[in-house]
Image (tube, rainbow over all chains, first blue to last red; front, side, top):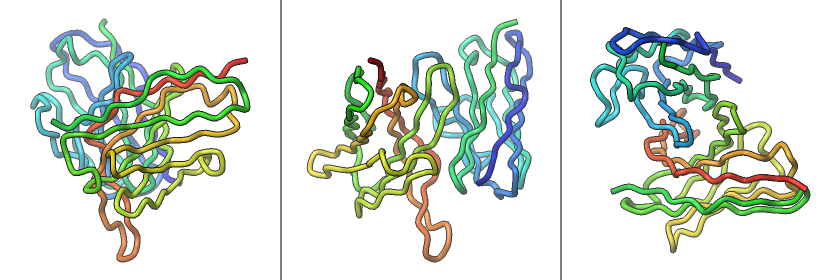
Length: 105
Length: 127
């Protein structure tokens, strides 16, 4: 099975900061990767699919890149509503990464 | 608008069974597959599997075979997750999530990313 490793697992940042989260796959998955945002007590929300395609309605400060085994989610200017936990998911065997919690510095 | 509305929280004793429902609206139910995802308290997301809403064929992830059953009632656009012989470690929030299907090989149908999610159902297993 394909394993996804996210880093960091915890991130402390300020409003306006540029934030980058990495997701590494144990084997190549082409561009079959999605990113989700989850706020406490809420269901996950799809942000990015096919590694770099922004889901409709998601702000353009979110972007995704990568292919093969290394992927990144970038938030260009962190906003108060972006403090949440972020997960990657590979669409070969569907496992999720362990999550990255983004908290206010 | 697309909505997935799940049934309410459940408190069950070890050894009992539970059935969680996920009612879809705002789209053609059989045009999208349904994923099921588990989230234990304070933990990450775990993909449980998916069900083909056209054929009713389920696919279970490793660790979710035997006690876990996905089913459908297409007449009411509803997907179900049944868990039998409940254990304390089944305590979690269970989510349904819609996804398009895609041919991953010439003969294998899979699913894409989950674009709409239910609100989650908390199942608590405690004596």
